Image 1 (cartoon, rainbow, N blue to C red):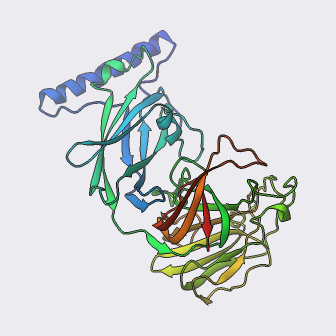
Image 2 (cartoon, rainbow, N blue to C red):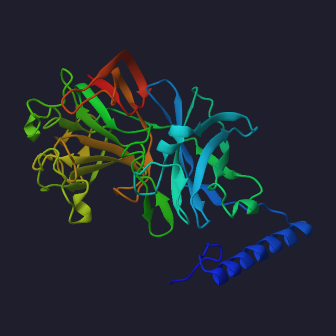
Length: 395
């Protein structure tokens, strides 16, 4: 299907006259409806939540409320988001996002290109990480989304105010599931995870043409550190990485519902190009640990799986070993909970580990490939989710 939007500026004199005519007609219709008592404001964007917000108690002692807002630009020119204000049911401001923080949290739905600009006739998702004191999360949230058009835009006179009152976001108040850790030992780095923008928090996919899903919001990548490094030597071999070959453990009693083995290992820092859908997670194990709750372990070492579909497992039981299979750039464990035994169609669920010691936080800006800089912050934690960048010790 081809054609030209009635609002698209055209260079030809006659076409521009027609464009102006249609804009005038639209404004006249709007004014007529206002006189009839049906006044509604024209806006350049439409904003709605992708799904209900989820809550997790994190290792900073705060409750993190996680959800995405979908912003669709209906105009034929870019729109820039300038500020998002989150309000409680009484209209009190809980937080606001603007500047570099808003830019980092705003991305196209599948690409990770961060920018507050919503392309012409395009859409973006805005990641909201609302951080509140424990047990103070309200039953629902509302928003004000401020935006701007290009300077001297011909469409500016159509807009009454450059702000949208977005629909409410409901809060899913089910408590995060408490589980045991999937690894043991010291020096485990949360190299991807909630709640700042990163490869897991940013992932959104379309399912069946009817919904957008967030399959990795709370999923964690575990890498392992010793003496400020994650590998011996130059790290060019999987065996040099401290995470490689480490046991992965059942986080709760459950039943094995899916396995995949035989996917080959790839060298570190060599991007593997998947040929099939099944290649993306590499070798895996999936456990059903509660109704509609599945634990997922990805990128496992080929030939290391110790379970088969239908096996009953106990919490703490070894399932396999960490490897570097699928599109992985280095040995690590990808772990998460989902409401479906599916890498794509399921929604990522929040969880907390029953007990661990937080050794510190990684300074990603100062760290290099062969030198990891940790800011010490030793604390014993119970029933907490480890945030992106945390370094953990498990007994």
